[in-house]
Image (cartoon, rainbow, N blue to C red; front, side, top):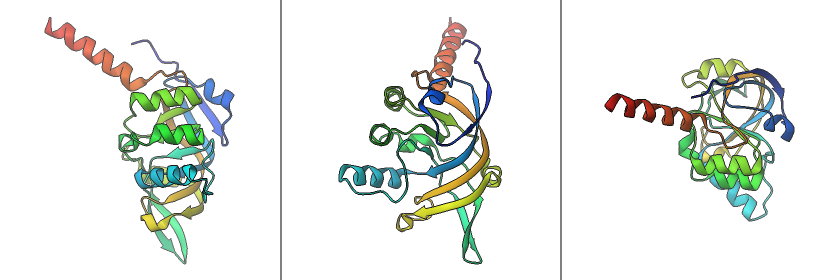
Length: 200
């Protein structure tokens, strides 16, 4: 497997198309700005709203979305984030290609990677998938400076749409770029190649 470029990049939301195009596999991104958490039920409802031309309560168009079900608590009537680690992204794999198509999502943050159909949608609509470290929920919470709003709490706290204001949120490793390159697929191919060599 070829050596990854691995640049460290500071970025602010909203992310431009040119910025996304210039990201490559292995780049480390540190985000400042707004991100929106979304999981299975949120994806399904957002798609349903869009197909029915209903107004969403948060801005998803060209947004940065985070596969995350945060742990929060209320302190003196205000929500506070306790932990906000990533959810396994494959859970959303069935709905994400359509979400990308409808909302032109610029960046997805999660863990574990996503399937070929999602990678294809990111290539077509110029977006990227970035991996965030699993088990770093408390560290992630420290990078969340403000809860801007929360919507769809009827879905439950983990499934609601949380809009976070973050500062230097990362490292986010570019694992699927806008050209369709997929770090997880590259690793898998390398493992398969090594296995074949061992078994010769």
